[in-house]
Length: 384
Ligand SMILES: *Cc1c(COP(=O)(O)O)cnc(C)c1O
View 1 (cartoon, helix red, strand yellow):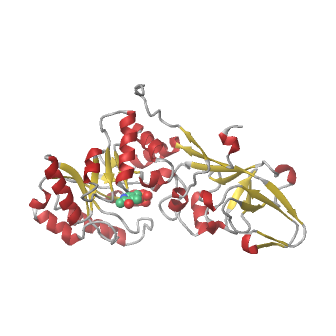
View 2: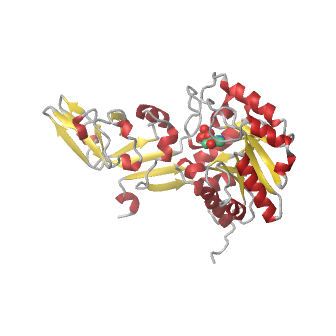
View 3: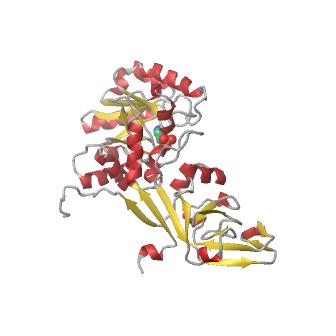
């Protein structure tokens, strides 16, 4: 019995859909504007190596990750496939005195978020004896990462602080881009544009996925989409235009016929009052299926939408399949838990969360299959 058949559930990741989404976003930009790709958190759970290689093959040359370890792993993936550091990898969390050498080893570009990080990177560049590239992040409304506007201005006014550093990018991050009518979007853009004039000629970037869709004034010289590459719609209330990338399928383990009033699952939170057929499926919160979908989720069996009833357990969920005759729904019947009609944004809403959390929590027990994967060794280089 092969691994796919043994697994309780399968996860299919369509890299051609990721590539199509990348093209869709890039085609919205004026020529010359860079479409980077955010592949932090293992490309939002889809796999930073296969996603990174696919996007590189699509012509993407600028990648963002959260941590230095994510950056090193992605650099190894790229170098294994085709040595030569053709892509720039930005690390959003910036360097520390002890991690600076790892950045240099991995040809990683730090995003400098504080004056301390600027000083660390400058000291390291001095020791390395060569100027080193960096991005400068200025906070315009997140109060999370980034230099304050005052620190940013102080930096621009004191060129000494940047000797040895090559500012490659100035960036900021939108707080409310998923709400197109929120006035904060334009306020942040205006503030950022004013601050960025202090670094004339340096590439500017403020737009995440939602920012790309807001309007072209947000594109500047580089955009940084993440979630849109992976299929969810970034703007609240936009019709679905992006390609779906993820499908989760499983098979029914057992069907329980209930004819007496009877409860379902932990806590007895669901009570079947009339004759009911309950299908048990081997996926649970340990697989990243949100526990918030208890009595709220849904799946598709043979084209019919059926509700999750009772609580989501660690390894199991229960579905009310009374709408289907037993001939169409028994042990072994295939069911779809995500994709192919189970919309990720709708499911996330039902769970009281966002698509980002569903994707980044995709579990490790699924049998994973990639469609459209790029051969990691296109030049046919022999393994040593
Ligand atoms: C995660 C992140 C992005 C991508 O955001 P999406 O909403 O997924 O497009 C862009 N920029 C920064 C700084 C981020 O942290």
